[in-house]
Image (cartoon, rainbow, N blue to C red; front, top):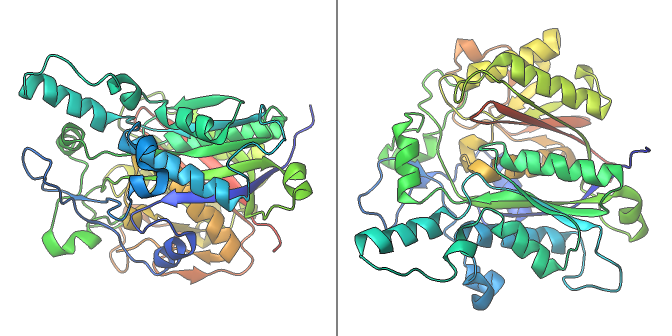
Length: 417
């Protein structure tokens, strides 16, 4: 079976910075954090942790009120990001005569419609109601986002959802890539969305003791991956989408190509539910390099998983040193979660977009809040602490490592303008 090249022709997002791609990357490159306290009146008690939200997102304005009312917020964010990527790819919203039976969706979410479910639980148990909305099931189901994307864009190919904790959207992108590369699909809309603001979800994460505490006005500095004084991750909401397309199809229709996806590898630590292992991450990195036909010397940047947890950061750096050997010290590495937060099921997708834009713009975004406070256990790679224009960025990796021991690594290549 001959493998096809896979072009990235569309990028779309709803991020804490808004939905404009150029502004998103400019602010990331400048090291600007979007992390703030979660301010809402809809919580039984205030949370003491910083959070990242998308306050400018108005689903009624983007999707129309009838459509938005049929969706939980995670699906609204996903649909808006998919619309953005689709329009960016220059594809018509409605069928234009070309069959879309080989065009599909691969979507990631760690939590699905938790806001819808929590609302239902409150109505049943707090308010004593005996009946719920007839939309409760379809609002909460994990495949709601990809179902709506398929329906609204008229995509008759596969429509699948992936729930693999923090690696959900990275795996969704990898599986979409495989289907385009094999010729099974011509176009795939792929990415992820999540909204961890449900009170029960936030409290559950808080109980794990992996969350950075709230520090009032210092919240923008709360997430400090690889720092000796790091205090944990910061959750956030968002959606991010890519359009992956058969290269020849993209060229034939005159599409703008942001970059090329060239490899994907996944593995499982098979050892612990929440404690990461170097060996599993090493396997995923090696599998991705082999899948892309690359050697460690071909990689010029890594967008790290980098959650700012005590155990996770040294393990990831250890895996990079094991794979890249002596070259690791010259390998630019950054964790953009320090600025946009950890978007759970959307994390891999927003970081994939950041990686593709880094290659396109030849600029490496930094790990914010990491200057002279590097943890010695995280030393051994070239930590980028201020946005850096990098000469000849050719290929890059984006890491996503999840609870449950699931690891996913995506490989991308720059294309000539």
